[in-house]
Length: 168
Image 1 (cartoon, rainbow, N blue to C red):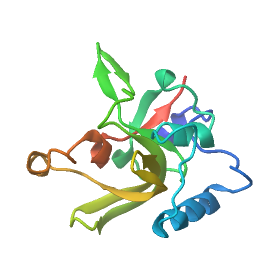
Image 2 (image 1 turned 180 degrees about the vertical axis):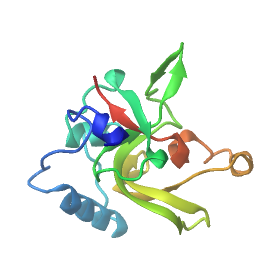
Image 3 (image 1 turned 90 degrees about the vertical axis):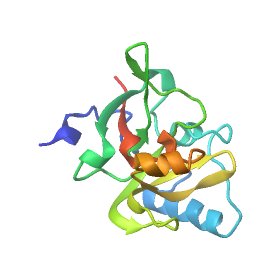
């Protein structure tokens, strides 16, 4: 029994289907459309939070709390909702602002190289303005890399900043 076993099962892990598709089929469908240049967005708008809200019962972002940090886990079920959290007045919240992100965990890569040469820690199924639903890899960003690339050196692109979403 590890940290993942202690998490509430409600709202944390993708359960069920979306338009009759299981998680793997869903990812294959949307990733294929994205790669073919015919991407679509899930949910009410192009925001990242709309994707897990459309696919799970994770609910309103104001209720979300951070569980274990993704890179500290040995195993995580594909489709688990993961996000960045910000400390606001001593409370960790999902900030719903640029540079912060949420998506569904896909799988660990533990060092496979991304296009930019950084080692990929895990992939996630996500969307954001300008990028429809599809897979992307996430690396651990060093302070030097963040300083050299301030536009991309945000929590939304740093694997060490993602936590399992827990809803009490």
